[in-house]
Every structure is written in structure tokens, then in C-alpha cells.
Image (cartoon, rainbow, N blue to C red; front, side, top):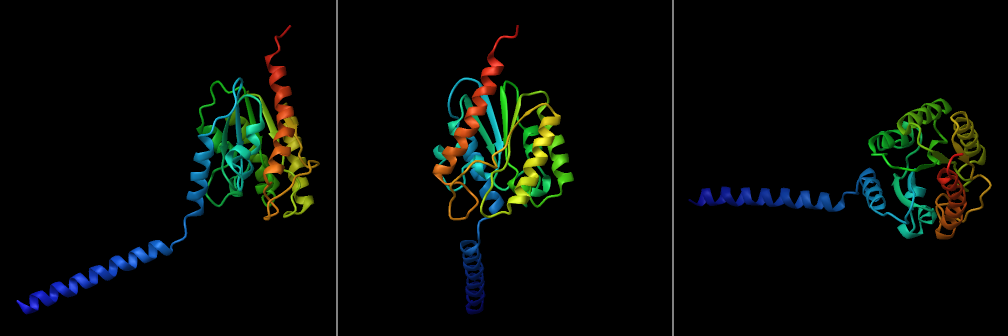
Length: 230
């Protein structure tokens, strides 16, 4: 009986040690950054602002509003009924994100686009270290996913963290690709923004400037679309 109790006591001690080690490991574990980005994307995607023409924004952390409140992110300043499909760190290329293929084209293909009056695709900063050939391929996949839907492509702004020439190269190629498909391109290189301490993401004031610049062009495109044809 004594030996039996001893064995049970040792077994309970082992189980308690394993459980404690597991709990400590879980407590000290860092959250999965890709899971965090996915959760942020879903939270931002649940926010719908405005009314009228249906506008879909596909973009990166700028669209999500990383570092600011959702109601301070630039898409809220757009006219129309605006939904956002943003994923931090993503871009036109598949290799832009370490979280797998969350490229714009892949996400656009997975969405229900029926009834969308205008698609606004914003980004390019996460593509600066990707081959231009991959940028071309990502843009082509995006156009196929969107079909004939009206498209406004909003290019990357100049940011203190990244070399200007690298950003300008992406801007130039996106402008060429957009023109070749008959869509509308808005360069943001000359837009003066203010930034958060990371020198990459706009602060609340920077989002206002960014959003107002895009809103002006979106308003023009929606007005043009609503005019009756002769």
C-alpha cells in the first residue's frame, strides 16, 4: 500500500511539473505576428463607413491604420460606402509578406466583388525589395481577379525609413502598369506626410492628408461613373 501511494505521489508530481512547464511556456510565448495581423485585418474589415456608392479598399498596414485608431485611418475619409481589406506587410507581390500569399490579387480573388462600384488598391512600400518582374506578375494577377471593375491604384509615399529611389522605382512601374490597363493611377510621392516614431507609418495627421488626397480622386471617379452616357 505504501509503495502504491508513493507511485501515485510521484505520478502526481510529474503531471504537476509538466502542467506547470506548459503554462509557463505558454505565458512566455510571443504571439504569432501573422495571427496578430490577421486579427487586425478582420477587425478593420468589420468597419464600414459612409453611404452611397460601394467602394472597396485593398491595401497594406496603411489601410488597416497601424498605430492609429480605425476611425483615424485614411479610408474613413473617402466618399461612398467604404469597406477595407487590409493586411499589414502585404503588397502586390507574393513575396512581400512573410505570412504566406496574402497578396492583393489573392485576396481580391477570394472576395465577393459583385456590386462594388470602385476598387481602390493602395500600396507598394512592401514591394520595394521584390523583383520588378514579380511586381508585374502580381499586378497582372490583380487585374484578372478584378475583371473590368473600375480601379484606382494609389502608389507608395516617400517615407523616411526607406530609400527614396527604391520607392520611386515601384511608383514608376505601378504607373506604367496602370496606364497600360486603362485604369487610374495616383502617385503619392509628392504628398508630404507626418509619421509615427517608426518613420514608416503615418500618424493621425498624416492619415488625414493621405485620405483627403485619395478622397478627391475617388470623388472624381464616382462622379464620372454616375453621369448618364449620351
